Image (tube, rainbow, N blue to C red; front, side, top):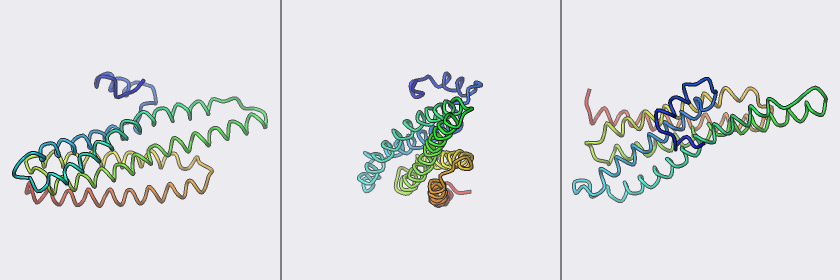
Length: 210
């Protein structure tokens, strides 16, 4: 089942059920997709407007990138659920002998890495999305500024939510190299995310006033 094919109400019902997936990781990706869709909308409301002719080329580039990111977020929304299912399947493998225990442990570790890598990717893409929002709000249609501001908040929510999912999984991973690299990537992405969102807020405040 692809969640993007569900009606909104059906997705929300599935989310609200006692099934652990989809969960916060998938919702983080949904936020990212919503944010990038708003970026594309701001671009569409800018390109073709004579007042913003000087921004047309740049906004076309922003729209192309935002649409690419939106597709990635949708894919990651499903990947998050599938990776969690694989993790749960690994946890249910038989144990009780050295061989079974070793096989189960290896499967759990492999699944743990996969279930962590997905939200880490969501986080990094959220920072990319936030950078596009900043460009859109600076040179885009001022009448759509509130939409750009909403996109920034969604990108921030997506990234910070994804970071929670990374952090909760890292303690269970024994691969120290992966853990170290994941922490570095997470820290770097969060710093970029904060930078772009803070700058967007400043622009928004200047555009909209107090």
